[in-house]
Amino acid sequence: MTILIEKPQLESQAECQEYVVEPNELVLDGGFPVPKSSSDDGFLAPEINSFGHSFRDYNAESERKKSVEEFYKQQHINQTYDFVQKMRKEYSKLNRMEMSIWECCELLNEVVDDSDPDLDEPQIQHLLQSAEAIRKDYPDEDWLHLTALIHDLGKVLLLPKFGGLPQWAVVGDTFPVGCAFDEANIHHKFFKENPDYNNPAYNTKNGIYTHGCGLNNVMISWGHDDYMYLVAKENGTTLPSAGLFIIRYHSLYPLHKEEAYMQFLNDEDKENLKWLRIFNKYDLYSKSKVLIDVEKVKPYYLSLIEKYFPAKLKW
Image 1: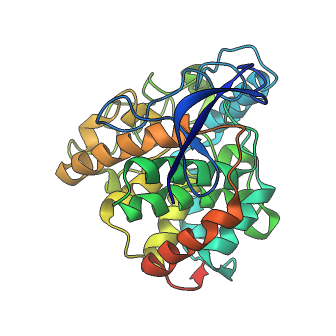
Image 2: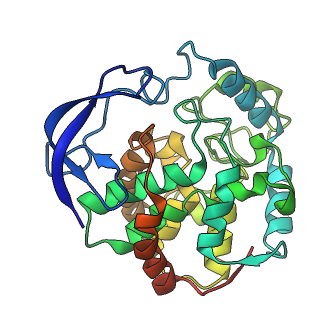
């Protein structure tokens, strides 16, 4: 149910705890306030994140700045072509456990993403915040609501039962390997210590790939995106190709924000990229200290899970 209530505004941008009242805010089932759109293209992005800084500001002085920068140093050094091949081969076995999508959502209560300068809440809150914001602007695209809910479920790779991978092998912005590291990548300077950086087979613009080969044929740094894509695809989801594209490439910021690596896209990629760019606004800007009432929204999302996924999945 969607109702109109008085709009809460942040009294303190940095603290995001207390509110003053202004009108015209939409609140969905979970109690999450969603800014009303000012145009026909959907979500009206706020100017600040829950820490009082600009979104994705990796230079802002904050408690998280040093840990985020150290994260990207480790990621950029260790994510090589050989490493990615090894991870895909290992995790495509899907032999860790069997569970439902919602059971995996609940597991994410144990996860906090060290690479994210905008968020320190449990991941299930981010999933629901994104999904509820999209649901308000695109009420008829239920596949997109579900895609938002599950897009980060691959972060369970951080948990011991899934191998307990280090943060740099699970989260953060992704990028192609097997070709030159584009300068659009955040903290590009750290790539100089990556073994592939000076490899003549990998350090040209196209590297081992060809123009227009399609992203499906390009190896992307290993992490939760590619893992959740493998889980969804191999378990026979009926999500449309745009949903799978969003899951697989939502962290590929150099592409969908900076238009790097566009030479690899085929026609289907270009169509799906339009949906990814829509999704990205909600993935990024819905992060908030205002929490979703999980039990209120649960029945709706369980119905979507039943529609698009089997009851139990191999992970």
